[in-house]
Structures are given as C-alpha cells and as structure tokens.
Image (cartoon, rainbow, N blue to C red; front, top):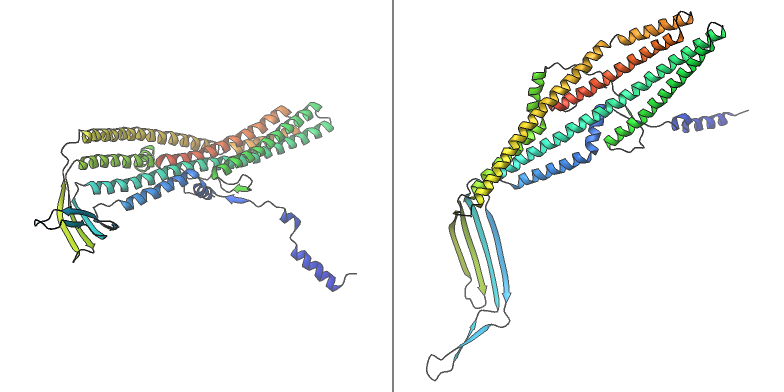
Length: 445
C-alpha cells in the first residue's frame, strides 16, 4: 500500500512531465493574409534590392544642393635642398675675384588657402538637385510596383491554398455520401431488395471518392510548399493560414476605377518622374553651354632661413567662364536627351492604355465571379435536399443507384462550383486592387 509520501512523489512527477500527446504535437505558425504580405515583403530579395536602391538615391539627394556652396582648400609643403645651386659671376671691378652666388635655401616651407564661391552657374546646381529629388521619387514608385505585385502574388497563393483546404472538406463530404450509399445498398442487398450490382457500384464509387480525397490532401501539401516558397521561409516549417472569402463588393463603377488607376498606378507615376528627370537633363546640358561666374581668392605663405620676414601673398578676383564653341557637342547632347524625353512620353502613353485595359479586364472578371456567387446561393441547399430525398427514395426502391449517384454528383458539383467562384472573386478582388494601384491591406480573417 502506498504511503502519503509515495503519492506526493508520483503527483510531483505527473506535474513535472508534460503529457506525451502534447509533446508530439506539431507546432504551426498561422498566417493571416496581412501577416503573409508583411512577411513576404520582409523576406523578398527583389524588395530588399529596391530598398537599397532607394537608400542610395536618398544619399545622392543629400549630396546634391539647390545652390553652390563655397569650397575652401589648403595646401602645404616642406622641401629641403641638400646642395644649393650656385653660379659664378665675373668681377664687377677689374682685378677683383669672381663673385659666387648661391640660389635658394636649404629649408623651404610653403602654405596656402584657396577659396572659391560660384556666384552664377545658369541653374546647374538647381537642376542637379531637382533631378536627384525626382530620382528618389521614382525609386519610391519602383518600390510600390514591387510591393503591389508581391501583394497580389501572395493573395493569389493564399486564396488558392484556402480553396484547396476547403476542397478537402468537399471531398470528405463526397466520401461520406459514398459510404452512406454503400450502407444503404448493402442493407437492400441483405434484405433481397436489390442485386449485388448496386453494392459493387457503391464500393467503386467509394473507392473513387477516397482517391479524390487523397489527391486533395496532397494538393494541400503542394499549395503550402508554393506558399512557403513565395514567403521565402523554410520548406520544413509547419504552417497554416486563417482567412475566409468574405470580401466586400465593389461599389465604384468602371469609369471611377479607371480614373483612380491613372492617378495611383506607380508605373505611371514612375514614368512621370523619369520624364521630368530627362527634362532636367536637357536643362543641365543647356546650362553647361551658358556662362558661369565665380569669386576666387588665394592666400599664400613662404618661409626659409634666408628671409628676414615671412612672405604673405594674397589675391581676390572674379572668374568668368563662357563656352563659345565646342564643336556642336552640346547641340548633339540636347537632341539626344530630347529624344529620350519623347520616348518616355510615348512609353507612358502606352502604359496608360495598358493600365486601363487591366482595370477593365479585372473589373469584368470580378463582376462575373460576383454574379456566379449570387446565382449559386441556393444551389447547394437545393442539391443537398435533392440528395436527402434521393436517399429516401433509394431506400424504398423508387429510384436506382444510378439516379442516387447523379444526385450526389450534382451536390458535389454545386459545392465545387461555388468554391471556385468564391476563390475567383477573392483573387479577382486582389487583382482589381493591384490594377488600380491600391495595396492589399484589408484582412478578412
């Protein structure tokens, strides 16, 4: 018989050791759509690359200034001459000795300051700063392009995985119906009300339904691998998703959506900034052919052992640079840059037409899926009621097993059709948001 101490020891170990079932459970990370997009943006290599490009553009903007800052430079050197240059001059008085002259000094020290302040540069510095600022804005739009595309890809994969998981439920319900039919057929056969043909047919139907269930479960594994690959996470991680297909209906009409797209699509905004950059380049090329004026000043010190006083030399003045003729190089550069501006304008026009087409296409597909969902609202309930009545009739020998199978097939098709329509609407909703340039932020979990 156990003593009180023995029971206390057993109770202590029971509390200390976790249940075996709990220890063997797989730990899963559950993602919502918003969390999936955030993680994908964090891990995506293209997003990282564009962000680094944006940082570089911002550093270039900090370097550029809308006006010219003064420049000051210092120079200094020390030189030691071991042997000095000498020269012998003829005597100044007849009969006197020649005169030997030594040039320079052994120790020589020089130092100087140079100052330059551009006063007028025909807008060169302003155009450079404006171009750097526009380049930052173009890089920001490029980042939005990558983020919008990645958000849509994640949403498409997310809803695809969600639909695959729901399809497993549909397949399982089909297996349950097949088992129910087999049970009824077996009972009718045992009672002599039907032949063995109905039993064999029900067994074949059950085997087919179980095969589809196996394929559906395997499809989940494939869809999860694709999802993890898009999020750039370890393929061995255990993951799950949480969400549904309850998305709001689009209230805006097609004309409004097209207008929103032309104002918000980052592709169009990026091309606008690039076009402005090219125009600034034209202005800079023209400015390089115009005069520039600068204030310059120098201050210099000279010292050696032969000087009784250090030399101090300074000057101040104006420097004017006025290009007169450069062999028509500037004219050729202007023509080349203006052609680039025209090409970007044409590219922007083509992109705008493509954006309008994408919006119309996405809108029409979304409306199609929305209409199908509305049509299929009562279809499943009607098909489910049809299966219930078919089971009763089959049990009473009023219909054949083939007719029962047709009713079950109609229910399965109704469930699959509605599931596909829900998936198409969710993906279409994400596609429309991408087409009009609005990031996918809504979380319907």
